[in-house]
Amino acid sequence: MLRTALRSSVVSLSRASFQSSSSSRVLRRLLSQEARSKIQSAVSETPVVLFMKGTPDAPQCGFSRAVVQVLDLHGVPVEKLKTYDVLADSELRTGIKEFSEWPTIPQLYVNGEFVGGCDILLGMHQSGELESLLEQNDIIPKIPEAPSEGSSPSP
Image (cartoon, rainbow, N blue to C red; front, side, top):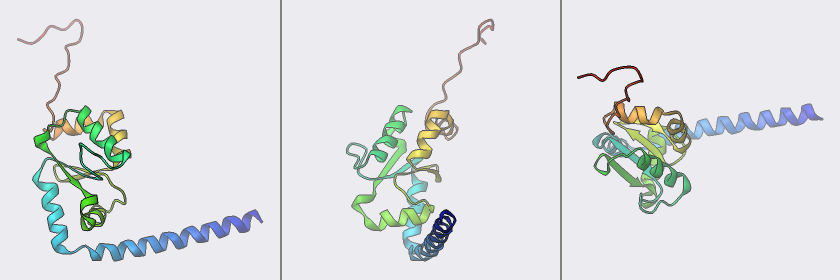
């Protein structure tokens, strides 16, 4: 009986996976070249681009709020950050998911490259990778390392 239940679950998962991949292929074809071009321009024009639900001052979901807070913790300057409220534009809401091939919002881009969503960003923040990424892309200034004990400062 357990074996039958497991087999049934595997078949259901396989069908869901096939249907999901089939629908994503259809969705990819629905994103017009004009919409793709607009999104590409948006992610390329500003060093840090965040597609979110709501605005930085009034996020409309906890994940968007968390990403805004992490960017603020790292001191991302307002002039280097552009946000887009996907709730204000349903075409953008579906289009950005197709563009990035990432199913959730928020989505963060740094210098035109997709970084990820909230979970990825939080993991990068905790590991120090986000700070390194922002420094390497000249979004935030590099903090000089303090000289170690016993070494003399350079003139």
